Length: 100
Image (cartoon, rainbow, N blue to C red):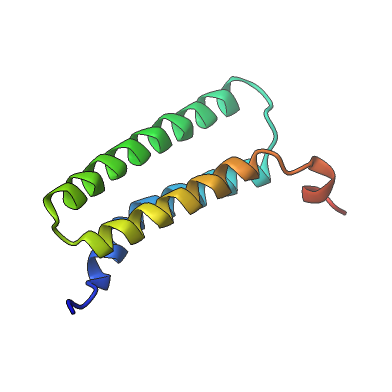
C-alpha cells in the first residue's frame, strides 16, 4: 500500500487555513459598519470562492488522473470542513461574541 504524502496535504492546506483564519478573525472582531467593512468582506468572499473553486478543480483533476488520490480526498475534505466553519461563523449571534 502506498504511503500518504502529508507534505502535499500541508502545502495545499496552507492557503486554505490562512484564508479561513482571516475570515474568522474579521468576522468575529468587527461588525458591518460601512464601506470599508463591505469592501473587506467582499474581498474575503471573492478570494474564498476563488480558492475553493481552484482547489476543487485541481484536486478533481488529480482524482481523475489517479494521481495522489488519497491526498486529494483529504484536501477536499479539509476544504469542505473549512468552508462550513467559515459559513457558520457568519451566523454566530452578537451576544455570544461581544461579552464584557
